[in-house]
View 1 (cartoon, rainbow, N blue to C red):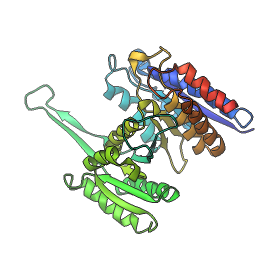
View 2 (view 1 turned 180 degrees about the vertical axis):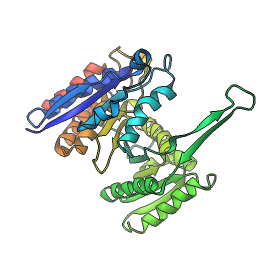
View 3 (view 1 turned 45 degrees about the vertical axis):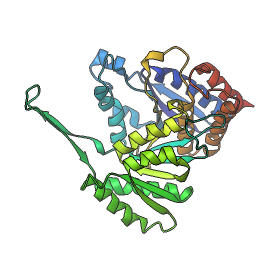
View 4 (view 1 turned 135 degrees about the vertical axis):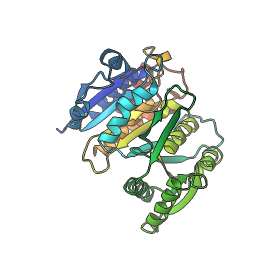
Length: 347
């Protein structure tokens, strides 16, 4: 029986709650098919307060030997600034392991009612994950003085833009053959015009894929007014981050917001995480919705080559939501939702 070695970083807040639930579902899904060995790491804001860093100096090398990484949530802004927790853990892992493709699915699960009139949408957002607006290039000069200057430089490389767009084209080719590239090239005349040019160049290699170009503001309106017209959406780090929170909202809320941070050439482990945040106010209260975390487990299984088990986990999630379990915040406990998914898997 094949064994997968999984690194767990439950992190902060409800990350601990949903990671525990997701691992129970993974255990049920794996039974009789493969084995999973997990190693948990305490890296979090609590770890930062004790050690002065979000993870130890050898953290990246420690993670490198695992088949995959599962992250619960990171952040506790009352004690550690979000800029510290993000740049101390999540972004270094994404960048060190070249997890350049962030994949976030947006569709309504059975039984879930979204806030829109539209119901039949199925959007796959592909976000560039290692450069762009989150490159960390810049600085501040004359701190605290009247003439203080802050500079944040977005970095777009041809390699980075081309590979995320190519990844998006391949996803579109395997789905409904429609790709929408999102920029703001009317205002950002260097980086976003460059992105548009690369998109048009690559489009010639994918004549079977219909390509649309949209500005980020128009795309935000499109996701609200006509999400059913969208298939694969590709955007930069910042634009993709914003659009996928909107995507979570139209699919019923952040409790359904799954994501995968993929290293497509598999030269390093990929990382899977729900993106609902740490929600410190409800941490440990058994009320967090674990569906996003369980959906992220399904993405992880698919990436590991366990497509059949991945599909079974997704089917079990929908079997639970079709019964009205976990479809609205506060309707069911974390334990109840987890138990319903496990029961569906074992049925």
